[in-house]
Amino acid sequence: MKFSDIAIKVWAAKESGLIRTNAEFWSKCPNRREFDEKICKDPEFSMVYERLYDTHSDNDSDIGIICAFDEDFPYINPKVKNKGDKPFLIFYRGDLSLLSDLNKNVAVIGLTNPEEEIQKREREIVKRLVNNELIIVSGLAEGCDSIAHKVAVDMGGKTIAILPSNISKVYPAGHREFAEEIVGKGGLLISEYYKEPATRNESLKRFIERDRLQAMFSKAIILISSYRKGEGDSGSRHAMESAKKYGIDRFAMFNQKTDSENPQFGLNRDYLSENVENRTKVLMTGSINDITSLYNPDLDSSNTLSGDGQISFKI
Image (spheres, rainbow, N blue to C red):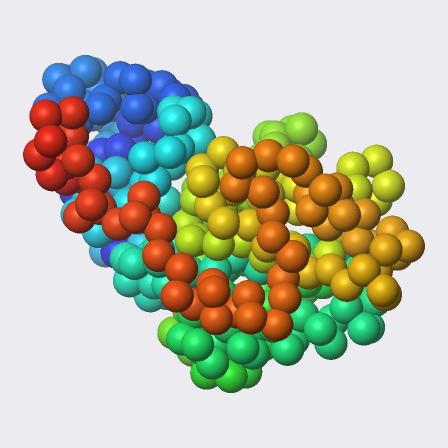
C-alpha cells in the first residue's frame, strides 16, 4: 500500500471518529498545524493510527492513500465553496498523476441503458476527445460511463474511473475485470471510501457524492443522454448540477431532428433550455475543438491568488 505518514494520520482521524465529514475536516483542520494540535494529541487517535500503520506499512497492495496535506493531492477548484463538497482523503489505484492537470480532463456521463444509435454517437465523440489527448473521466457505471472508459482504453488513451464503492471492491461487480484493465493500461481508479456502506441510504448517497467529483476533477462535462428526473435514470443531473456550481463548462449531445421526442434525451433538453449563466451548450461538430482548447484558470493552482494578492499554494 502506498501512502505518506500524514495520509495514514488523516485516515486514522476519520476511522476514530474525530473527523466524520468533509465539512468537519475543513472546518477543524484548514492546515497541518491545526490538524496536529486538534487531532493528533487525542489518545483515541494514537491507538487507531498505530493500528492502521502496523496493518498497512508492510502491505504490498497497490492501493494508495492520499490526503489534503500531501503535495500531490488534487488541486480543488476555488469555486467549490461548500466544505462538504471538498474531499480530503482519497483511495486510489493506478496513475495518480492523471489528476495533476485538471485542464486535460473531460467528464463523459449519461444513462445506463442508451439506445444503440446513442452508443454509436458517443463512441465517435470519445474517439475524438482521445485523439485530442484528453483524459476521459467517468463513473464506471453501465451504459454511457463504461462506453466512455472502454473507448479510451481501446484507443490507448487514459481514463479515470471515480467509484461509488470501496476502492478494493469495485461496483458494479461485473466491471471489476475491466477496472483491472483500466489500471493495467495506465489509467486511474479513485474512491473516497474504504468501508462498505452501513445502510441503503448511505449507499445511494455515495452515487451522488461520486457524481460531484466527476465535475470537480474535469474542465468540462459532456452529457451524452439521460432521462429527466422522475422519468427514469437521472443520476447524471447530479454531476451536471455540480458542474454548474463549480463553473465547469457543460455540453449536451442533442440533435433537434432526431432527439426531440426521445425520452432518453429528456435531461439534455431540460439543460439546453435553461436560461442561466454558464448555460449548457449543444455539442456540435466544432465543440470537440472548443473543448480541447478550453482552459479553466480555476483549475490551475499557479493562478490562484490569496486575499493579499500573493500566490496561494495548496496546504
